[in-house]
Image (cartoon, rainbow, N blue to C red; front, side, top):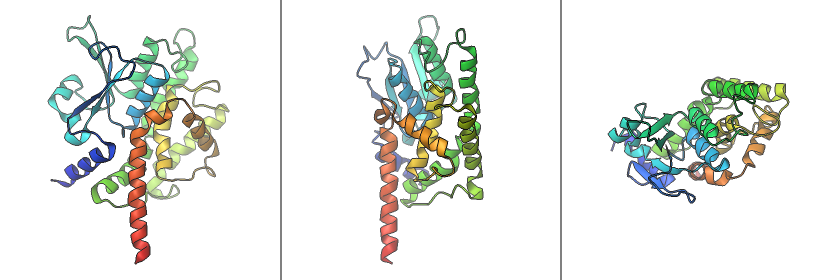
Length: 278
């Protein structure tokens, strides 16, 4: 197998995803497979975690199809026929008014916004009619998310995870004060400043979390996986992370990430133990 295939195969084993490109897991509250909307995703995917966590928090009926990225699930013709961008998470629901028989949507922010509006979950996404400014704040954060905290995945988490999967080696991510982590440092400074300027407990509100917080935390939690200590330089962000972690259904939404974190800790411990014996 190629190096990439080997890496993805290891990812499959760590996350316990079967080789089939799509593995269905029925929600315990699902009335029937044919009538319940589907969320396609993978447990390691940051935005997938945000969407699935939201569905539980807002009691949105859904079933999960785990897309086996390792087996090329996002590149499979049947998946691309539904979602040409080939990205997860993705959402699908039956639609009698659509000639194709289904309504489909990509991008976590768009999916959560649609579901919050559809199910009247105004705590998570304020109404455009009743609270247009509060809604604008949530949209402001979500529009900026890819250019800020997403750097935690691309700069820190993904290289460390891929090295652990491909080479079974621990490669320490760069210190936050290094040039390599400049994009992450900038994102954290902006996030810390936003929390401070608003003097709020959450990204967009002091009263309650919104879907913006679920997106933000999906990135920030990876700092814990990599054992970064940010309490000194980013105390507001550290306290914020603890508040979000205390929301209901946290454990269910982060099972896949917890398995990956355990695997990374195992690789690191094994490597450090071998080094100590030299």
